[in-house]
Amino acid sequence: MKFHTTIAILIAAAVFCCMPALCAERYAGGIPEITAYISGTNQFYPGEDATITVFLQNIATNKTKTLDQATLPDDDISTTAKLVTAGLSAGNAPVVIKTDPLSLGDIRSSGRATAQFSAKITNGATLGEYLLPLSVQYQYLDNNIRDQETSATIQYNYAKVNKTIPLTIKIKPEVHIEVINVTTSDLTVGSEGYVNLTIKNIGNDNGRKASVTLIRNGNSAVIPTDTNVFIGNFPKDGVVSCLYKVSVTTDAQPQTYPVDVAVTYTNAEGDVVTSATETVGIPVSAKLNFTITSPPAEIEQGKTSVITVEYQNLGSITANDAEARLTTVDPFTSSDTMAFLGDIPPGGKATVSYKISAASGADPSAYSLDTEVRYRDSLDTSQTSDVFKVPVNIIAQSKSGSSLSTYAILSVILVILICAGYYVHVMRKKQ
Image (cartoon, one colour):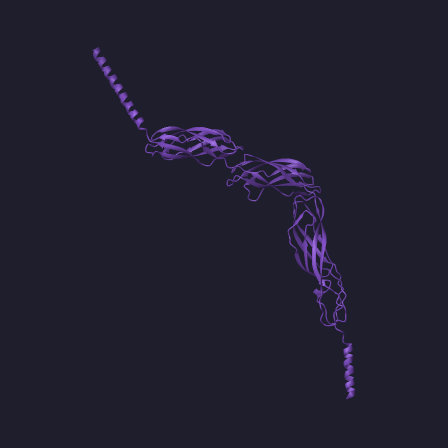
């Protein structure tokens, strides 16, 4: 019995000695090493809306050893960069970064991730190279577990990493424009006119075979009719003047409206490129308006009279070859409703006459007749003003005038009778 007991104890001891000690092996692995670079172009123009694509790569070498009884999950080995975030900032570069920091998840050994950042290169960016700081944060499994007790259970310890990786971008030379003067000629609501722009190349490139383009800005009331002016060579600090024909919508208001200007040219590398747009304001005057400055005309009931009407130009441009039209309605009639006004400058006046009849049964009162002015603008385009009013008063037929008329008739009859009587008297004497 003692022999069997002794054998059993020895076998148990042998089995115990042969069992591997849990976690007896220590794993020896590297740590994550994140690098980054810009994918695609890193060269941009001033004023450009850019997308900066960044590749982040984990270049760590995976040396992790498997523990005897407890193995680490693949995602939690020491070379995995966990919970990676990346944020791009402008630093001292002439760039506005529009994208907030991005969460990229885990990047395993030899793995990589892509981050895209929206940016705006400032209009005044100067030629040169600039560094954009890329801030990267992540954590990894700390491989120093020597202090842990030998066990099937492993206590994970994570270390946090914050690092900044500089990324290089280049600002390329370009033609950059500045509109230094804007003049217009007789540009009013609903009309056509000219816009003259004086443009300077304030960029750092010499444009060849350049054309300056005038572009409608959104739903602006100013619409370019002529859109392109070829200017040839446009060197740095060069100044050119460009004349464009534009139209103004009829629903516009007297105010300043935007238009966009850009230059398309051939750069030093032989590429045809277009500069950043420059937005400028185009002043628009009110539609040409007229008013009546003469006092109300008077017409007697049942009579025909010639009335005098004075028109004044309230606008800011000259009304060329102006003609006025009068519209008569009951109780007025006329076959003389058109009158030539000639050229009326801003603030100028012109006087015309109309022959108007008033019905005999018309009520003595104040009336108004519609009138409008047709004229030609500076581009010889026919324009018509809005309808406005001519005041006319109908007055009662004069009684004194009626009595005088009757008296005149009776006087004529009396003269005729006297003459007839005298003639008869003379003839009788002769007999």
